[in-house]
Length: 246
Image (cartoon, rainbow, N blue to C red; front, side, top):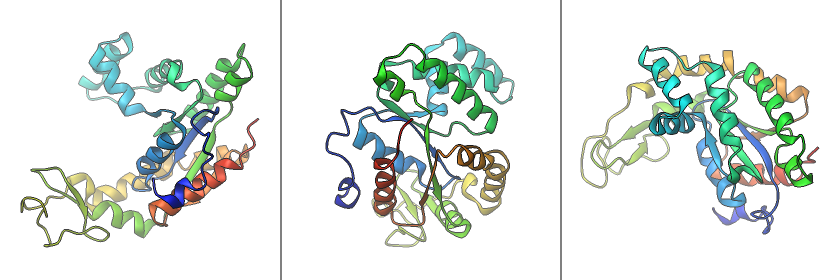
Protein backbone atom coordinates (compact mmCIF):
# COMPACT_ATOMS: atom_id res chain seq x y z
CA UNK A 1 0.00 0.00 0.00
CA UNK A 2 1.33 3.43 -0.86
CA UNK A 3 2.22 6.11 1.66
CA UNK A 4 -0.87 8.18 0.90
CA UNK A 5 -3.23 5.37 1.90
CA UNK A 6 -1.22 3.92 4.77
CA UNK A 7 -0.73 7.31 6.41
CA UNK A 8 -4.37 7.35 7.49
CA UNK A 9 -4.32 3.86 9.05
CA UNK A 10 -3.76 3.45 12.77
CA UNK A 11 -0.47 1.51 13.29
CA UNK A 12 -2.28 -0.80 15.74
CA UNK A 13 -5.00 -1.60 13.20
CA UNK A 14 -4.08 -5.29 13.02
CA UNK A 15 -4.77 -5.72 16.73
CA UNK A 16 -8.08 -3.93 17.14
CA UNK A 17 -11.61 -5.15 16.52
CA UNK A 18 -12.72 -3.74 13.17
CA UNK A 19 -16.18 -5.26 12.78
CA UNK A 20 -18.03 -6.07 9.55
CA UNK A 21 -17.29 -3.98 6.45
CA UNK A 22 -19.35 -4.24 3.28
CA UNK A 23 -17.99 -2.99 -0.05
CA UNK A 24 -20.77 -1.80 -2.31
CA UNK A 25 -20.44 -0.70 -5.91
CA UNK A 26 -21.09 -1.72 -9.51
CA UNK A 27 -18.81 -3.93 -11.63
CA UNK A 28 -15.59 -2.04 -12.31
CA UNK A 29 -15.84 0.20 -9.25
CA UNK A 30 -12.65 -1.26 -7.75
CA UNK A 31 -14.11 -3.28 -4.87
CA UNK A 32 -11.52 -6.05 -5.22
CA UNK A 33 -8.61 -3.61 -5.20
CA UNK A 34 -9.89 -1.74 -2.15
CA UNK A 35 -10.64 -5.00 -0.36
CA UNK A 36 -6.95 -5.92 -0.66
CA UNK A 37 -5.99 -2.61 0.97
CA UNK A 38 -8.35 -3.37 3.86
CA UNK A 39 -7.00 -6.91 4.26
CA UNK A 40 -3.41 -5.64 4.37
CA UNK A 41 -4.21 -2.84 6.82
CA UNK A 42 -6.46 -4.66 9.30
CA UNK A 43 -5.52 -8.32 8.92
CA UNK A 44 -9.14 -9.41 8.56
CA UNK A 45 -10.43 -11.72 5.80
CA UNK A 46 -12.08 -10.73 2.55
CA UNK A 47 -15.14 -12.93 2.10
CA UNK A 48 -16.52 -13.49 -1.37
CA UNK A 49 -19.62 -15.59 -1.96
CA UNK A 50 -18.01 -16.94 -5.13
CA UNK A 51 -15.01 -18.16 -3.14
CA UNK A 52 -17.26 -19.67 -0.46
CA UNK A 53 -19.31 -21.48 -3.07
CA UNK A 54 -16.27 -22.90 -4.85
CA UNK A 55 -14.73 -23.99 -1.54
CA UNK A 56 -17.86 -25.80 -0.41
CA UNK A 57 -18.20 -27.55 -3.77
CA UNK A 58 -14.53 -28.56 -3.77
CA UNK A 59 -14.70 -29.92 -0.20
CA UNK A 60 -18.00 -31.67 -0.97
CA UNK A 61 -19.68 -30.28 2.11
CA UNK A 62 -23.40 -30.86 2.54
CA UNK A 63 -24.07 -27.30 1.33
CA UNK A 64 -21.59 -27.72 -1.52
CA UNK A 65 -23.24 -30.91 -2.76
CA UNK A 66 -26.63 -29.17 -2.79
CA UNK A 67 -25.22 -26.12 -4.58
CA UNK A 68 -23.45 -28.24 -7.20
CA UNK A 69 -26.68 -30.05 -8.02
CA UNK A 70 -28.43 -26.72 -8.51
CA UNK A 71 -25.67 -25.36 -10.76
CA UNK A 72 -25.56 -28.53 -12.84
CA UNK A 73 -29.25 -27.96 -13.62
CA UNK A 74 -28.29 -24.51 -14.87
CA UNK A 75 -30.15 -22.73 -12.06
CA UNK A 76 -28.97 -19.96 -9.76
CA UNK A 77 -27.97 -21.02 -6.26
CA UNK A 78 -30.89 -19.90 -4.04
CA UNK A 79 -30.53 -17.33 -1.28
CA UNK A 80 -31.08 -19.96 1.40
CA UNK A 81 -27.99 -21.96 0.37
CA UNK A 82 -25.82 -18.86 -0.12
CA UNK A 83 -26.84 -17.46 3.27
CA UNK A 84 -26.14 -20.78 5.01
CA UNK A 85 -22.63 -20.78 3.51
CA UNK A 86 -22.03 -17.20 4.62
CA UNK A 87 -23.28 -17.99 8.14
CA UNK A 88 -20.85 -20.91 8.37
CA UNK A 89 -17.95 -18.78 7.08
CA UNK A 90 -18.58 -16.00 9.61
CA UNK A 91 -18.18 -18.51 12.45
CA UNK A 92 -14.54 -19.17 11.52
CA UNK A 93 -11.82 -17.92 13.90
CA UNK A 94 -10.30 -15.46 11.40
CA UNK A 95 -13.54 -13.42 11.54
CA UNK A 96 -13.21 -12.79 15.30
CA UNK A 97 -12.08 -9.15 14.81
CA UNK A 98 -14.20 -8.45 11.75
CA UNK A 99 -14.37 -9.22 8.05
CA UNK A 100 -14.92 -7.68 4.61
CA UNK A 101 -17.88 -8.77 2.52
CA UNK A 102 -17.35 -8.36 -1.22
CA UNK A 103 -20.35 -9.13 -3.42
CA UNK A 104 -22.70 -9.86 -0.53
CA UNK A 105 -25.36 -8.81 0.21
CA UNK A 106 -26.61 -8.24 -3.32
CA UNK A 107 -30.24 -7.59 -2.43
CA UNK A 108 -32.23 -5.99 0.38
CA UNK A 109 -33.51 -9.44 1.32
CA UNK A 110 -29.93 -10.64 1.83
CA UNK A 111 -29.13 -7.47 3.81
CA UNK A 112 -32.05 -8.12 6.14
CA UNK A 113 -30.87 -11.70 6.61
CA UNK A 114 -27.33 -10.47 7.39
CA UNK A 115 -28.59 -8.01 10.00
CA UNK A 116 -30.49 -10.82 11.70
CA UNK A 117 -27.51 -13.18 11.52
CA UNK A 118 -25.13 -10.63 13.03
CA UNK A 119 -27.62 -9.92 15.80
CA UNK A 120 -27.77 -13.64 16.64
CA UNK A 121 -23.97 -13.86 16.61
CA UNK A 122 -23.67 -10.93 19.04
CA UNK A 123 -25.88 -12.66 21.59
CA UNK A 124 -23.86 -14.01 24.47
CA UNK A 125 -20.58 -12.51 23.24
CA UNK A 126 -18.23 -10.42 25.34
CA UNK A 127 -17.63 -6.76 24.48
CA UNK A 128 -15.04 -7.60 21.81
CA UNK A 129 -17.29 -10.20 20.20
CA UNK A 130 -20.19 -7.77 20.18
CA UNK A 131 -18.06 -5.22 18.30
CA UNK A 132 -16.79 -7.89 15.90
CA UNK A 133 -20.36 -8.68 14.84
CA UNK A 134 -21.79 -5.18 15.13
CA UNK A 135 -24.05 -3.77 12.40
CA UNK A 136 -21.88 -3.41 9.29
CA UNK A 137 -20.25 -0.27 7.96
CA UNK A 138 -21.02 -0.04 4.25
CA UNK A 139 -18.53 1.64 1.92
CA UNK A 140 -20.08 2.62 -1.38
CA UNK A 141 -17.61 3.27 -4.20
CA UNK A 142 -19.24 5.87 -6.44
CA UNK A 143 -17.93 5.86 -10.03
CA UNK A 144 -19.29 7.69 -13.07
CA UNK A 145 -20.98 5.49 -15.66
CA UNK A 146 -18.61 6.45 -18.51
CA UNK A 147 -15.57 5.63 -16.39
CA UNK A 148 -17.06 2.26 -15.50
CA UNK A 149 -17.51 1.54 -19.21
CA UNK A 150 -13.89 2.47 -19.93
CA UNK A 151 -12.57 0.37 -17.06
CA UNK A 152 -14.54 -2.69 -18.16
CA UNK A 153 -14.68 -2.45 -21.95
CA UNK A 154 -11.03 -1.34 -22.10
CA UNK A 155 -9.73 -4.54 -20.51
CA UNK A 156 -7.53 -6.75 -22.67
CA UNK A 157 -5.65 -9.85 -21.54
CA UNK A 158 -2.81 -11.98 -22.79
CA UNK A 159 -3.95 -15.58 -23.31
CA UNK A 160 -0.36 -16.79 -22.87
CA UNK A 161 0.95 -15.11 -19.72
CA UNK A 162 -2.31 -13.78 -18.26
CA UNK A 163 -1.27 -10.12 -17.98
CA UNK A 164 -4.19 -7.69 -18.04
CA UNK A 165 -4.12 -4.27 -19.72
CA UNK A 166 -6.57 -1.44 -20.24
CA UNK A 167 -6.50 0.39 -23.56
CA UNK A 168 -7.51 3.63 -21.81
CA UNK A 169 -5.55 3.57 -18.54
CA UNK A 170 -2.77 0.98 -18.87
CA UNK A 171 -2.24 0.25 -22.56
CA UNK A 172 0.46 -2.05 -23.93
CA UNK A 173 3.50 -0.46 -25.58
CA UNK A 174 2.34 -1.77 -28.95
CA UNK A 175 -1.45 -1.61 -29.42
CA UNK A 176 -3.07 -5.03 -29.25
CA UNK A 177 0.12 -6.90 -28.34
CA UNK A 178 1.41 -8.16 -24.96
CA UNK A 179 4.55 -6.37 -23.74
CA UNK A 180 6.05 -9.59 -22.36
CA UNK A 181 5.68 -12.17 -25.12
CA UNK A 182 4.17 -10.42 -28.15
CA UNK A 183 0.97 -12.47 -28.04
CA UNK A 184 -2.11 -10.73 -29.50
CA UNK A 185 -4.34 -9.51 -26.68
CA UNK A 186 -7.94 -10.62 -26.41
CA UNK A 187 -11.13 -9.11 -25.03
CA UNK A 188 -13.44 -11.35 -23.02
CA UNK A 189 -17.01 -11.52 -24.23
CA UNK A 190 -18.06 -10.39 -20.73
CA UNK A 191 -16.15 -7.13 -21.30
CA UNK A 192 -18.00 -6.02 -24.43
CA UNK A 193 -20.13 -2.91 -24.15
CA UNK A 194 -23.37 -4.82 -24.74
CA UNK A 195 -22.71 -7.27 -21.91
CA UNK A 196 -21.39 -4.56 -19.57
CA UNK A 197 -24.51 -2.46 -20.10
CA UNK A 198 -26.68 -5.43 -19.08
CA UNK A 199 -24.53 -6.09 -15.99
CA UNK A 200 -24.81 -2.46 -14.87
CA UNK A 201 -28.57 -2.52 -15.46
CA UNK A 202 -28.89 -5.67 -13.33
CA UNK A 203 -26.82 -4.04 -10.61
CA UNK A 204 -29.07 -1.00 -10.53
CA UNK A 205 -32.21 -3.11 -10.33
CA UNK A 206 -31.06 -5.53 -7.63
CA UNK A 207 -28.26 -3.93 -5.66
CA UNK A 208 -28.74 -0.17 -5.79
CA UNK A 209 -31.73 -0.38 -3.38
CA UNK A 210 -29.13 -1.36 -0.77
CA UNK A 211 -27.97 2.27 -0.85
CA UNK A 212 -31.37 3.35 0.47
CA UNK A 213 -31.47 0.45 2.94
CA UNK A 214 -28.13 1.20 4.57
CA UNK A 215 -28.42 4.95 4.09
CA UNK A 216 -31.64 5.05 6.09
CA UNK A 217 -29.84 3.18 8.89
CA UNK A 218 -26.90 5.64 8.81
CA UNK A 219 -24.39 2.93 8.01
CA UNK A 220 -23.41 4.18 4.54
CA UNK A 221 -20.09 5.85 3.70
CA UNK A 222 -19.76 7.15 0.14
CA UNK A 223 -16.28 7.31 -1.37
CA UNK A 224 -15.35 8.92 -4.69
CA UNK A 225 -14.21 5.94 -6.75
CA UNK A 226 -13.26 8.10 -9.74
CA UNK A 227 -9.95 8.96 -8.05
CA UNK A 228 -6.66 7.02 -8.39
CA UNK A 229 -6.74 3.84 -6.30
CA UNK A 230 -4.42 5.20 -3.58
CA UNK A 231 -6.59 8.30 -3.16
CA UNK A 232 -9.72 6.13 -2.93
CA UNK A 233 -8.03 4.02 -0.23
CA UNK A 234 -6.95 7.11 1.71
CA UNK A 235 -10.50 8.50 1.69
CA UNK A 236 -11.89 5.11 2.70
CA UNK A 237 -9.50 4.68 5.63
CA UNK A 238 -10.08 8.24 6.77
CA UNK A 239 -13.81 7.62 6.89
CA UNK A 240 -13.39 4.30 8.73
CA UNK A 241 -11.25 5.94 11.41
CA UNK A 242 -14.16 8.26 12.20
CA UNK A 243 -16.85 5.58 12.37
CA UNK A 244 -18.66 5.37 15.68
CA UNK A 245 -19.43 1.68 16.13
CA UNK A 246 -22.62 0.92 18.01
